[in-house]
Image (tube, rainbow, N blue to C red):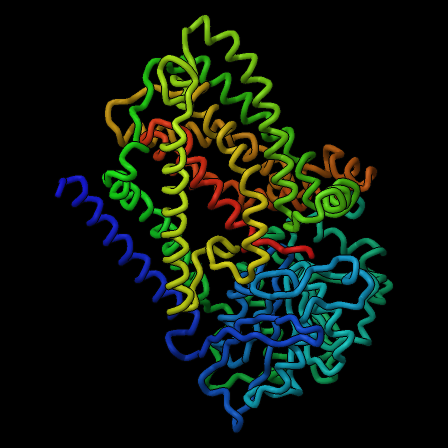
Length: 617
């Protein structure tokens, strides 16, 4: 056996052990090291679909010792496990928790219908879970609380209105307008300070506007973090201010502490028993740490596996010599990289609005009714738009430089012939098959992890998990080809062809520098865009950057209104793509062609899109 193969086997085995360790530890943290039973439940809805949830049951919750229950709902584009921080800490303190997959999200088999939801006829299955919780023999049916983030917060409020026997309701960054406090019990809304509206400013400034406090029946500004009313008659009311962003709310230490104490006062009469843990002592962060470790180790295992498979005769020809005739000069590279990154950022706030409701999003859903992933629709249009722009610019560049520098498509990592543009369909077929095998390997690992430990590979927001329905798998197939085109052009032909970098002293140094510079060339100004949106409100106590430059007002004026949501998407898009660019770089250097990396990354992207986003039917 070749020494390189031995090293690959050792690395593969070591990374698998890390995956196993991380999955076991994530499971242990979530169950408070055996003190809480955590199970997956499917609850039939009246129309026949299944509402799903993760049930957290403290070991001492029995028919003889009934405990209060809390329903925890995720935000739009998320799933039940984004509420794991709240669920873990509440269950450790004597609450039965049901972290819910709302309709159209997670493992729920129902549809997300914004039109029906807007009429008030649907609370996205939360009512089904509420009624189910009341039937559990170990739940005190007279003490059930509701909480949720963003969309989940709105559904917690709406469910409270149709289930007046609830004990508390705590929307997270989702204080709705016109809330009649006489119709809800023990109401607290936790606001993210680092969020704003053009008309009212930052959330922590909204307290001073009549439009805010009058909706709650107040005639003067509400004081943040001040308790109004009383828990004794269920009239307790508070607006809590949390120093965080909108997507930062669910994993916020401050939010979890505030929520836990509110539920204790609302559902446990403020009592502190032998099971109580101080509200600010948390372990949930380790759940994310270990799941993230499992994710990185699983992804890392792809590299030694690919090395082993490329040493097999069937796949050996996929690894072609890397063309070395053409390298962009440093000056050319920085110019092209800056332009490419700038185009990506300038087009992002506009083209991604097709991934939200309003003028553009509604048009897209009408014209392409079979493409049912909401936010990915915006990313899809943005990718195709950038691919078209690149194709035009590249055609002009290639026409000039193919003669001046005597280069062809072979030198750019596209062709399999040094003399002319030629595609070896046999090698391309094996390349695609290898990409499928590598992604299938990841799917196998996460399937085993979910089956044995109930643990997905993610960091807070959904990343890698099994397909819960065939519809979601079909959606992944529908988005694959457009994403693959974008990866081949903008992240293949550009990064490793037109903007090819030179070699450094060692292979390791070359891989590292190529990766980091590829990240710059693709994401640098998206990072700037994210800072433009958030830095003013976080550091200078003003509005969102988009509000300040008029982008929000312009978007509202044309009925689009999606720029703020797609700016939030950048919080996880940038870290995800930063990781994936490492693999994209490694695959090109290993195979000398742009195809394997583009295939692998495109498959990962559509997999994440299909399992982690709300689905419209």
